[in-house]
Length: 454
Image 1 (cartoon, one colour):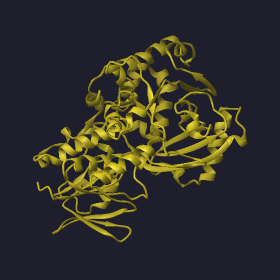
Image 2 (cartoon, helix red, strand yellow):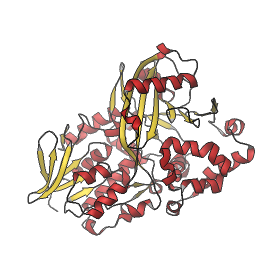
Image 3 (tube, one colour):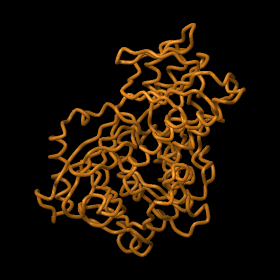
Image 4 (cartoon, one colour):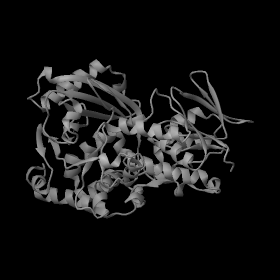
């Protein structure tokens, strides 16, 4: 492989940036194309009132070794702040603290047997090292077996619907295993307790530093470049962009969601297109609120009441020093939906009425003048759903078109889609790209398993 080969990467999120970074460290000539006007993708920041912070909620765990390694490389890891947080549960119109075992036993809305079975389900799930067998059973069937029908109906189903909507019926048990595995990652690595961390300035600060490093590595960054078509030509892989520009690369990596990659590449085989289009995603509508006063001092509040229009409450100011927000409270209200959900068509004003009305009902001490800012982020494809036999049905990272590769978050098999996993996927992807036997590699060796990081 010639050192002078030109590598192109479509998608300037954390995945694309890390692919570019690691390829550049190998001496490759790399151009990074991003459709937006800034890098970062789901990790990017925006202006919210008088502050600048992340569009979506993120948290770093002590066990996130890949992310912490990158922060160290960027010279930022020593500035991380680590905090213990509390967890809430809103059920039957009441708010409970379930931040420790005693509170769980006292307040969790189940009888003693139900609480024991619920806890044992989580403990048992944390002991499973590989999710392969779990891909063969539905998440509802597995949870019913271990927690019982009432607990599934009262607790698990509302939580599954909050994350997957109606698609919870299609998810395998590997989905819930991935969540449990991440929560227990610290304990598996020998830590006595898990701490949540944040970088002062948020992910936007990390992204700014990352972009500087890429520039120093001679990575060419092209923002405002929305890819519209990818074709093989005699000169190499040609990419057309909506701004009328074109680029030709010897090798091209698409990091876009699977269905978009299929649409961009008309020359893929029908089998490849089908595999890409069969991947099912959940989207997110995430409202960011800047408030004058705090809510209830829980970092995450899980919601089981179905009248609430959002699927959780993340009070970021319980983790991040409120001085980062001008002394105010930053709250995220996520709503996970299918890419076709009609809620995507609602205006910010319509969502504001729905979300703010519900939030005031949940927290009666709030007043209308407490709301300083309300903004909404909409992303139609965020999380690839871990359906039955998921890892067996995914397409390879390499395509039938020589030099064209597709590496995206769907390759994080049975994960929870966080920044640590994304960085790990990028590193695994670069190993695949640089391998002289990459064309012979089947998908099983390319599918990033959550447990490989534990």
